[in-house]
Image (cartoon, rainbow, N blue to C red; front, top):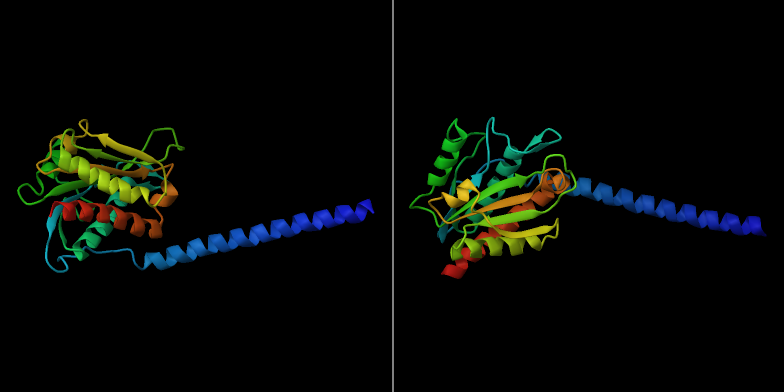
Amino acid sequence: MKKKKRLKVNRVIIAIILVLAIVFGLYQSSKVLINYIASFFISDSFISEVNGPTKGTVVLDAGHGLNDVGAQNNGIYEKDINLDYTREIGNYLMKHGVNVIYTRKTDARLADNQNEDLRERCQVGKGKADYYISIHVNSIEGNKDVKGFEIYYLNNDEKSYNLANHVNEEMESLNYTHNRGVLEGKSLYVIRNNTVTPILIELGYIKGDFESLTDHYHKIKLSQKIAEGIIKTIDNEE
C-alpha cells in the first residue's frame, strides 16, 4: 500500500516537473521568436525628414564613440548600445513630428581629446534645439548585480526637470528594472555646460541589466517610451 502511494506521489512530481519544463521551454521559445521578429523592426538607418508638420527640435547624443567605448560586457560596448537606442528614439520622434539633430550617427567622436569632444557635443543644436538628450549605459566596476535606470537634469532648471520627469514616468511604465530616480546632474559635463536644456539618461547597468538592454524587442519598446516622454514635454509647452 505504501509503495503504491509513494509511486503515485512520484508520478505527480514527475508530471509537475514535465509541465514546468514544457512551459519554460515554450517561454524561452517565445522569447526567441519575439526577438527574431523584433530584429526585422530594429532600424538600421536614420529617418532624414519629419513626418508632417514639425512641432519641436531636440538633440540626441549617443554617448562615447570610437576608442572611447564606455562601459562593456560580454564583448558589447556601451557606445554601440547608445547608438542603437538613439537611432530608435530619433526615428520614432521624426515619425511623430519632432525634428532631431544628432551628435553622431556612426561610430565617431567630434574631437580626439575627450574634453574637446564633450565641449563640441554641448555646442550641437545651439540656437536650434529645444532640448538635449544624452543617452548612456551605467556601470559599477566589479559589481554585476546593480540594476536600474537614472535620469539626470540641470539643477534649478524647471524645463530640464519636467523633461526628466516625463521620460522617467514613461520608462518606469515598462517595469524592466529598478527606477533609481530623477537626479541632479551638476557633476556631468554635458549637463552643466550645455547650450540647450539638457537631460542625461542612464538606460540601465551594462551587467545587471544586460539582458534587457541588448534585447531587440526591449530596444524598440524602451526607445518608444523615451520618445513619448519627450513628445509629452513638448506638447505640454504648446
